[in-house]
Amino acid sequence: MSRTHARSCCGRSPEPKEMLLAEADFDDVEKSILAIARYFFQSFAAPQSQGWMAALDLAEATFGDPDGPLIATRLLTTMRAMRYARRSLFSFNCQSCETCAAILTEQERRLITALSAVRNGQIGRAQTELLMLCEGNDITQVIAAMTRLSIALPASKAARVGDAYV
Image (tube, rainbow, N blue to C red):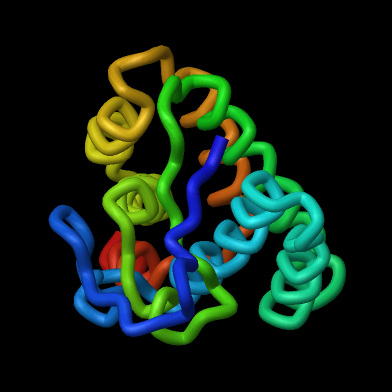
């Protein structure tokens, strides 16, 4: 269940609880994952868009072969686990609209913040974000899927810097 904010592509500005993507503390990998996720969400909201094909193309273009398809599959598994845990719609912005793509919905922010936390070994922070995102429901499968996704992704800069001191 997804709801897009594509509207008229657009003169849109952030609504309450939204922010500009440029203001989020996400690295390039996390921003790419958000873009890929948005195409998958587009497929859920408007199946005729075949957004899943754009998601796979972007994953392969960003992460190469064979990593791109693996990352896309693990992302989709994470999204599916999240969809099972959530009861309400997931608001996302259209990646195909430059204006919409520059805005981060609350749900997108929580999803990517949780992924960032997992990538940086901050499991408690990830669990907090996922509990909010999944409305207090069981997040066991979501965190497990997100951990598998994280393993497939390049290490975050923060994780690499931390490893240098060990």
